[in-house]
Image 1 (spheres, rainbow, N blue to C red):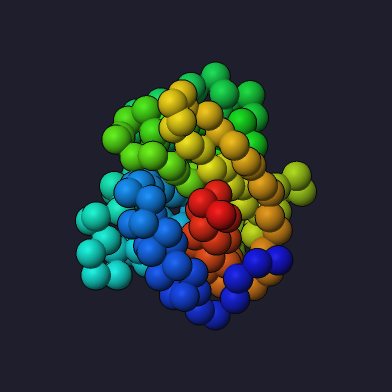
Image 2 (cartoon, rainbow, N blue to C red; image 1 turned 120 degrees about the vertical axis):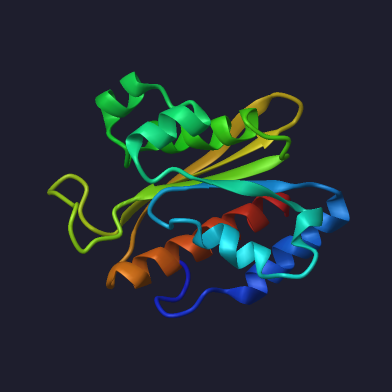
Length: 168
């Protein structure tokens, strides 16, 4: 399990900022269960407009479809908290923006909403790049412990650290 259940990893956010700036790249997030926490963390850093394109907060299924083009059939077949949907979200964020890399987060932060197949704390991540074609390069499923805030903080840290690893 990555990240702290209590705090956002500001050092990872600063390292990501420096890496993106040095490479003249821009990132974008598409967030469901984190509700914009990745974007809030990154934009809390001075100069973030030089390397952070923006964010899509796609909490509802209809937002995933409308904002980043996740096909309704994909949501119906696999559910919102799934690898194919995370992948489609990451790729869709790049298609809908000028960013160079993206991270998508979709999960169940709790305290309700989970089930036997997708318990509370389940989060899918996807990272995609544009080089020159848009391609999802990695997906990861994580199971986080703790309350709603702890799950969201751990997911935010995992998303930011994943972007940083993409650049290494």
